[in-house]
Image (cartoon, helix red, strand yellow):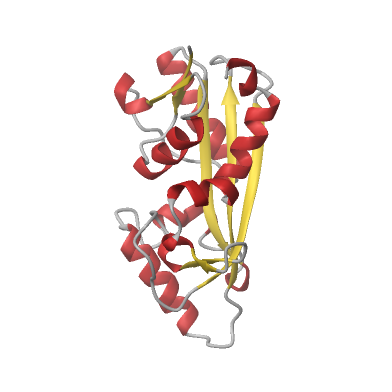
Length: 199
């Protein structure tokens, strides 16, 4: 069985990837199981941060590593929260803190567009010093709701309205979300480019 390590401590991301990989003979190991410490996300782009996480996990585990960096982009706010989606309301902010800050910010200008999208980039390093990492990306279009809705999902999903499904994202099942989400799209590219040979 092909084994790779996920360079993340985000439980939500782990569940998404495990669901996406469940039909295949590919074993995804979270970095916490291999005692890989967290690494500072010092990149200036989603791609840079995904590379940092993947290379860090690969170096500590000596396994192929998957790095993911994702965020919510609100066009009327200049692309924020963007790279800082997980820390939008501060270093120790909870998902609820981040959502409330975003809702409050948008409420200050009722005429501002609520159009938004999730963006995800996945990087796969086949070994710690892989000079040609596989890079895949995906985008999920929608808009920001005025209040949280739904109980499924994590992060900003409770305030994100999916244009594809015409419903709040947090009302979708994991299976439905994994058909169209930003992460699912990026994963499908990665699977088609490389992982299917191990499936």
